[in-house]
Image (cartoon, rainbow, N blue to C red):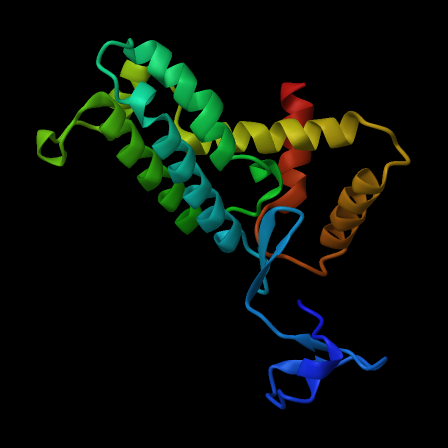
Length: 197
C-alpha cells in the first residue's frame, strides 16, 4: 500500500483508495513488495514465486557464460546453478504457503534453465530428472520442502519466548480448536520435524 502525498489526494477520487484519516489515503492493490518479498491479497505465494522466478532468470542471464560453457564440467555447472541461481529463486521460500501451481511454475522454470545448461533441445525428449542427475542437482520441490522443514524445526527448537514460535503455536492452537480446517498446515510440519529430528 502506498500513501499518497497531499497534493495527489485531491486529484484521485477513485474507489480504489481508502481514507485512513490524518489527511492520508491508501491505495488498494492486488500485490505489493514488503521486505523484498511480494505479497498478494489472497495470502498465497503466487506473487512471490513469480517475482523469484524473474530474479532467477536474471541471475542465470548474468552467469550464462559459465553455465552454458562446454569447457566447464556439468557437475561444476550444477553446483554453480544450485548456489547462485536456485539460491536466488528459493530465497525466503521456506515461509511460502506454496500450492501445486507454484511448484509447477518453479519446476518448469528450472527445467528450462537446466535444459539450456545441458545443451538439450526440446525435441530431444529427455526427462527432467535425468538432466538433474547429470548436473547433480535435486528436484526444486524437494529442496523447497526441505528448506521449509528446516525453518520449522529451527523455530520449534528455538527460544520459547520468540515471537515467531508464539505465532506458530498460536496457529496450531487455532487449528486444533477447529477454527481453520484448510490443509494439513502446521501439524504436518510439527509431526515431520519430531519424526526426523
